[in-house]
Amino acid sequence: MLATTLSSMLSPAMTKADNLLAQGRYADAHPLLLQQLRSKPNDALAHEWMAAALLFTARPDAALFHAQRALALEPHADATTQGRRHELAANIFGALTKPAEALAHARKAVELSPTAQALNVLAAVNLMGDNKAGALEPATRAYTLEPAEPTIALNYAGVLAEIGKPEDSLRITMGAMNAGNQADPVFTERITTLLHYTTPIAPLAASATDADIIDPTVKLAWTKRWSSHVTAVQKSLGAKPLTRVRDFAATRPLRIAFMSADFRSHSCAFFLRPLLKHLPRDRFHVTAVHISARKDAITQELAALCDAFVHVPTWTAQSLAQKIADHNIDILIECGGFTTGSGIAACCWQPAPVQLSYLGYPAGTAMQTINARIVDTLTDPPGTSDAHCAEPLLRTPGCFVCFDPGPDIPPLATRTPTNHITFGSFSATSKFSRATYDMWSAVLREVPNSRMLIKGALFDEPAARNAVHAEFAQRSIPHDRIELVGRLANPRDHLNLYSRVDIALDTYPYVGTTTICESLLMGVPIISRAGDQHVSRVGVSLLTHAGCPEFIAKDASDFTRIATQLAHDDTRRATYHATLRDKLLTSPVCQATSFAQYFGELLSTAWRTSPR
Image 1 (cartoon, helix red, strand yellow):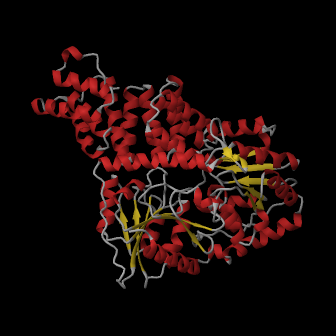
Image 2 (cartoon, one colour):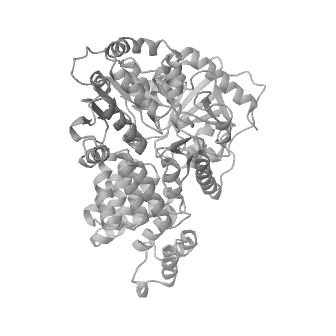
Image 3 (tube, helix red, strand yellow):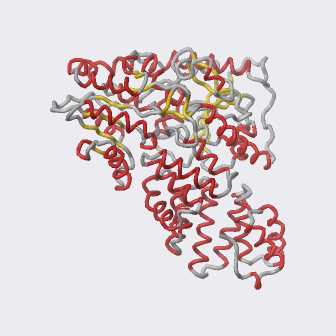
């Protein structure tokens, strides 16, 4: 992108920098660009290249000045040049976790010069801002223009994952990695995450006990590969422990911080609320560290439950770590794992003496600065689970999560009789694996005249709808048996839609969490298949502790059997519709006070026993 054909017009320093940038030697180009800017401070091209060199050496905060300077110095440059510079600015704002600014520059880049790369940046920025629908069209256009370009293939693969094609997404991602730079960490990050969503594809081995889930040793190897990169990057920036020595003799409350980008209208809020509200204040001082620019009414509600609320809308790993350390946190609980924008890289700086991983990621992180991961005995049975997680597992005595749906729960609606059974799924389309479609289709074939209602935020987009219908068509399920519903106006509309569902069907291998709780809350039985790893066993824990073990299937055929038998038992379904809400709300899954007590005991244990 940065190489030029104007080498005869460049100074010696710029010519050398041009060659280094073309080789990806950004750090080596930096002193040459600095030399050029000292002699010619208004050289727009030198500012552009300096911005790129700083961005690609993990210094986006310093890069921003130079990108903005390049744009300001030549406001009337040709469209190609201006487009390229807006594209660079979009990437920098993205690295600074400023999605609104990134989106504005990405749109301007495409408007000025709709190249495949500019379209790709627009798609990436939309994905970063959680606007998956907005990413579909530019990502597809970019891939159509340049399918062999690895970074373009990567974003297109990301879109495929979101519309229910995780296996295709993984295949394209691995192919792009092999076609480009084998060591590129961006591909490693994506693959590491995708492994939890997809069924096995060559050359990735299946689990020895389940052909529909990737072997845990394969996942662990990729996790270690990615965590090593994260750690190496932070060490190159000077990462060192910011923490203080633990004061075991102190009798003060321990200072606990939950770090998440989801202190807002997000499913994680249902499970963070009980801890923020009920952790005993005689033993704990509770801080929420909200690492997203996005705020809403739920943010305000959760902030009011905390002893301290720290909003960090933009950050680098180092600045975030320093912010946490400044609050003298004793135990930091990161709640995002390797999800986008989780802030986990800040843990490399050890801003707290004890650091734990919890809730928002379905596997371990293999980060050496994470002391342990919080699970339970059903999600991660003692024995083999420990061998497949790099960090120690701390197991709660009951369910590892507690569900608090908040006060705005709609009443159970009177169900309108129909002449057919409606199955349903409100899970994220990214969890719609090959095994998921196989299981759902098998159920639909076994229950004649049945329908399936699937709700997803992307179903307002034709590409997403077509992808789902195509998967069912491959399994001989006609279009008219599948109803797709897009984004709804508010959470009550979302919950009220359950009144049209007789039986909910879970995804696999990445099973639901919020969707299981919401189904039971709205009086709808949900069938969940149990696997041999955490990602496929959360349903086992939730349904067992909610008193509904009969909804747990041991394999795909058992999934079909349970769903089919329930579909043919009107009396049993009616009983469930009338009783499941109360059963859930009075079960251990929703007992916030007792949950917070045993969670607090676990934190105290971690404080005393985690390695120093």
